[in-house]
Length: 471
Image (cartoon, rainbow, N blue to C red):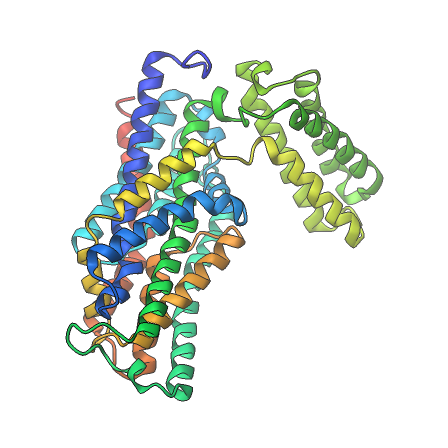
């Protein structure tokens, strides 16, 4: 197996350790974020805690496993693109290992620390901050320019989604609960539970459904972040084995060669004078891809040392085409743009993938993690955000908005924070209910929201520079 990956025994051991730590992060993500899905069903007496947590674990697992069939793995690919994986390869095994260990350790430390304090901090912010931190720290080392280790455009895109999503959650939950309070004829929906009595059957079914929906959405979005993290590790530390889709068949390789020719022809025919220089660069990369793949039946037929080069060439070509499209240098009609988008998707088939066992391992770690440690943050969400107990309508509204927001974000490949979307949704319902917010808790949550990114950037960056002294 190690010979297939072009790795030494020591390299294989280090890869295994990094993968175990990555699964540990996803396990921590599970017990850290479970409360987002189960708080409302527990505090409305819709389900016993153990049943709620077990059900949440099952739907988290399903969310990860079915994500590729429900819109692809765009979120995972977005995580991969945050930190150019070329850094992990071109900088040498020692630097690559320091990067991986630093981002994993900092993410786990922050996740466990905020869980211990009962703060619903964001695992998404944590992971993204850690990745950005090691990229920035690496760019501080000799021979680099500050910032060249991070895809700043992707950071801005993801940062915007993390900022806007909780604001949307607050506003949407406020508006939906206001409509429910205004137009519902069932006054019991807007009352807190009476003692330990469960809600009416219909209300209970709704609350269980929304809890399962949040769990599924969390698995679909947060699970993909874990998949992206594992793929970053695999491609960085074992590029010969994972830079390209290992099980791609001859038809896929032939299709890639054919689409390279189609794209070259498109660029030759449509690139204007302003885009001519960029078009020539793209065509050069496409020609390199064809040269590497011509006559190959399997990815295994490509020399191990060349596989990452093929990946780089494909991504550079695709990035160049994207620039030409955005700048309007190709002058394509609507139909031609659609055809080009399909060709680009075909081009990336060898690079945009995740093995089934990575999906399964992440799903299992997330699902099992869901079963432990949930109580601390459940108490914060259920008791401390507002000044009064959650009503049935508040619980259902907050979770319906959270699930819808997260599923929509996953569809567009945007990583969002389940924690912040749901917490802000609960806060929105408290304002709409006119029950008031607990200022101390809101301040703590806001502080965790604001501090997570800078804290994990500094922590992972510092750990990277420390680990560089020993590897």
